[in-house]
Image (tube, rainbow, N blue to C red; front, side):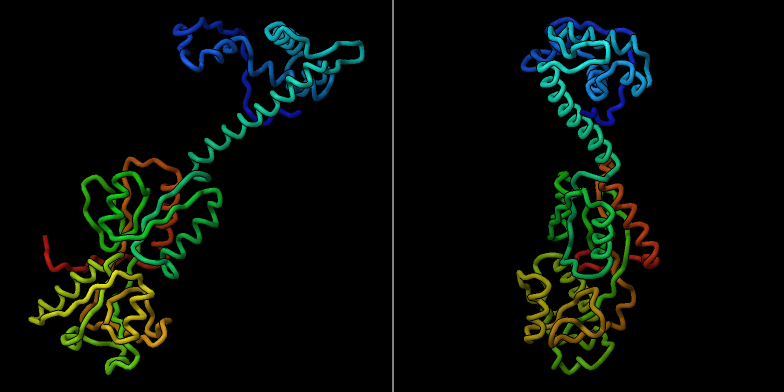
Length: 347
């Protein structure tokens, strides 16, 4: 019948609160206020120690206090309860039936309190709790996949919620405190949010394996002038649409862009079937998608920057830890390049 590891401080005097509003305890909690000041947590822990040892002296030694203190406090506890918890005899004590029932309940109650105290500390330290993450695309591989794998390994007690969507929608959810952090393309400047560039990805063009340019490792934007591009409605699709339009119009070329409300895997399937070419990131020259070839763009020299966005007043330990982990991973991978993503409607 162990009381757990709740810190218990010795007190020299009991407070005697009044009733009702004088206690600061009213309404449905007023019943519990009748115990406040009369039942000492120290006395309960000492009673549990006596029940474990069945001897006041041994209990006092285990608690690091003196015999008279334990004996007096148990006597006051029994007086406040109006029952006898122990039967005293020359060779020690034994629990009364009432005492056994009462202290069994108290032991369970203190275990719950001990758990609550420990859980609160773990939440503050980021070891438990909840973390809402917004992503721009699936995370099969790359920086985000490695980051989330490492975070889940080091924080098994944290419940992670993941939402996928467009950058502006994810940032809105962060601002509305529905997400703790969002990972987005670019480094947006948002008045009430913090933004930290973390990693870069090379922009490439995906095309059907039978396309005349499929054997080329590198192409130029002028090579793509007559091509039809396909983009997703979700994820970073809107930003890639603007990038295509800007890159071709600045070369006096007229782009053709088709939109599909699909995920990345389906979009790659559409590329393989000849619906059009697609800009994407994170794909190696030898694509893992069947019948899809990947080429780098020679006059797209700078990689795209991806950033984390969060609210500065969010003091969550889970947020703090994933930001620290992301920063360490960013430093390991490479130095973040300047943001070169352009839009067709610069502000």
